[in-house]
Image (cartoon, rainbow, N blue to C red; front, side, top):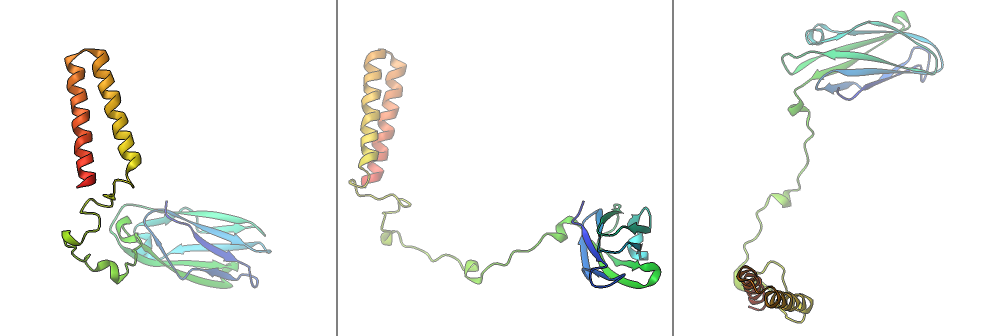
Length: 192
């Protein structure tokens, strides 16, 4: 169900109607009648264009003082977009208001996002020689800054070597070799 259309009644004076001038829905929606301090009779009517795809079960509604009532507008499948008018009448014709209603496809109702023009410009080309990090994508090539990483690598080599000695297995020895080769490649990339 789409977002609700809220109608405020009897806020400023008896039979007063206050609501949006336009409403957009992608499917069935509710008209919420929020009433002020006096009971009121409300008549809701869809014009011919809206009636071709939408319907209201009952057109006349009584809304008690300081209460709200929800009236469902059922929208069927059909051609989109459909634009029409919802007529709202209070006090047996004392006041009348209209809301322009558009029934659209869900894709059409998605809000657009404003994009700053600066984001539309392509990023400037960077020469590989100008990279402060040597093209490593933010990794600092200074070994002192990577000391914890180097210590972790040495620890991994020690664990792998001790595992190979204790297991006495060719499969474990191949795995240890893969770990050591990976760590050597990572170390090379850090210091190059």
